Image 1: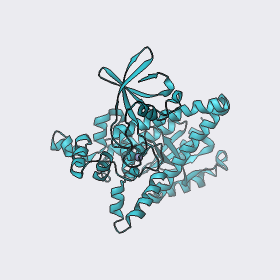
Image 2 (image 1 turned 180 degrees about the horizontal axis):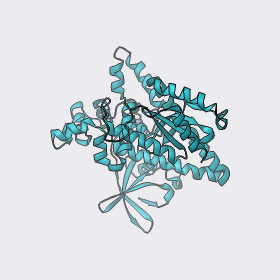
Image 3 (image 1 turned 90 degrees about the horizontal axis):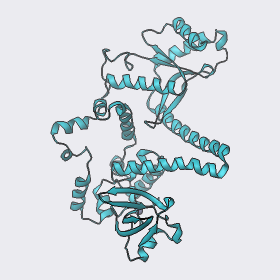
Length: 397
Ligand SMILES: [Zn+2]
């Protein structure tokens, strides 16, 4: 069988030894007025269907290439699941690492399904995937040190991502366990609603619909790439100026929705420290006595501002903000905010001094990178008059 190469139609290529594998996307062969599945079927190549929803699934095509002509001689596919690309696929209701899911997706008995899960799963959650018990228990701790050792400078962001993932990380199995007395059909519906609410361009979303992390990351990247292409499509539709504007608006909306999400979540779970609150109440009273701060719209408490960090896909909130001077002020109590890594500091939960130190550092860098001025007020150095001098100094220079 022969296809002509056209960039538009090639989904992605992978080099496997001597052969190149082409992965076509459904509907990619517009030239034939058919999708690739139909073209393959016409050529007596049977293509797999999703075992949950019977829709077509992506496949890899083995081919040789000669002067822009692709000669296809084989088709391979990884499994019988559409990866939730069909939005109404019932496979999406399952935890992809569960025996229920794998036995149905691959048409296996439960014992073979369990074997398959274990064999393919390089997940560090399995004891078998570690050389020693010590390594396994270290992994289980999954503390900041672990991420710092593994990813170096990127460790902190990776750790934040991991913590976020834990927050989202509820499988359908877990959901059922939490609601043991509720009818299973009700739970399935409820779960579906929760799934749909999840932001479908986050990494977490792809992790929730994929068999393994590397597939999830690949799909996630694909999605990001598509989002980038959106800019081109906006430009071709509306011209450069209007298109860019519309595209930026869209991204801005997306970010704001993330900020809203994290903010509402945060207000529910944490409260603004009483000490910080008193400090800022007093600060406002004093600032209002000074000419240049008359009528400033201070943002604090439930109006805290948030900045979205692209790297960790997380929104961070700041104690106090003076929009008129673009100045962020953070009030750092010593219990949660070490001044140096050598401070006498008691761990909080499983988080140690490095976590809090790095978090503060990252927050400051994030704010400065986004063009904000930044001032930290320390609990043991919070005399209002002194702080006001500092603020005036920053705002008038
Ligand atoms: Zn499906």
